Length: 218
Image 1 (tube, rainbow, N blue to C red):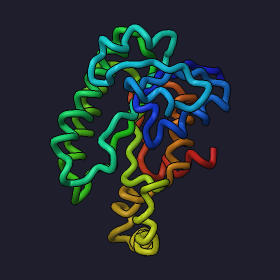
Image 2 (tube, rainbow, N blue to C red; image 1 turned 60 degrees about the horizontal axis):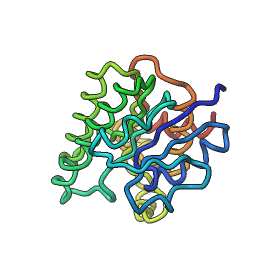
Image 3 (cartoon, helix red, strand yellow; image 1 turned 90 degrees about the horizontal axis):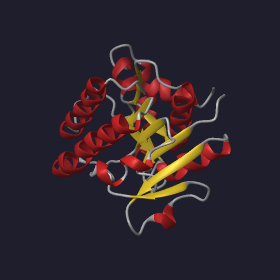
Image 4 (cartoon, one colour; image 1 turned 60 degrees about the vertical axis):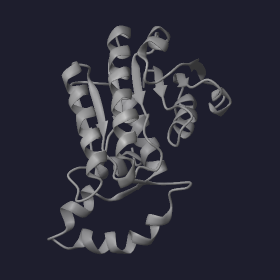
């Protein structure tokens, strides 16, 4: 495994705060983008970059020497009533990240998207699909991770649904959708992100829920 230098947006968020220590523990170097006033929330050992994730001019020149870009910007606790935020923050942040990545010569772009298709959360899925399209159009080798719901601190209520998921995954009529829209844990996501970073980029690779769960076993 070759140590890499990774640039992370959303470094102080739900996944970023756990991903950074995992990468550092495996010998990688991390440059973490955060807003003014949030540097104290970045795990120790990362190089803090102050900037605006929606404005590539504030961080593009600070990406190097990173060769991998992990994009974790997103509206907290996404729900049906947050469509405006998805369009005002989530999608523009992808555009900014890609603009900065192209300028910096990034070799691999890692993006947390969402499982699809699904019968709900259409505005969120629409924005994440557009984000994927923009990544593909950029030509940067990429890994797209597609969880549905990530269980973890502050995100535990769906544990009540696990018996129903177990049943639906056994029934032929519902198995495919239950697997595609299955629940993953924060530990699953961190493991999948680490594996994605270490495997590097070659074209565009999509990792769905079963692949995210399997990453923890590698």
